[in-house]
Length: 115
Image (cartoon, helix red, strand yellow):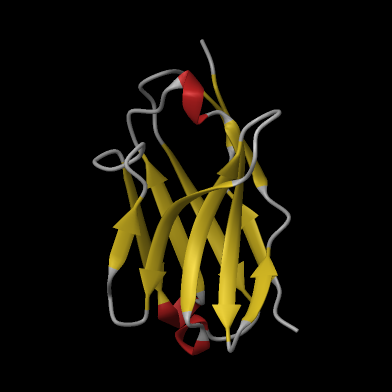
């Protein structure tokens, strides 16, 4: 069993920034992929960004150029730097780890973008 825990959410004004963290209780270097998702109120969960052990990163079009996913294997942590935040970015943000076909989700962290 793998546990991942997100943190760093909060209330921010439009145009502001936040940095989310996702800490795993095992080595993230052992994970196939680490991803961030968001779920806005009343909507389905949707993919935001991916980081792989090969160093590849992928982004949803809606966040490309504004969000950056990164990782620190020594700290077993994946980050999501979010800049130029918009009210539409308001959602619960989840971290997802995949290893050997098993999927592990965190409990999520709330991000609210509002003036």
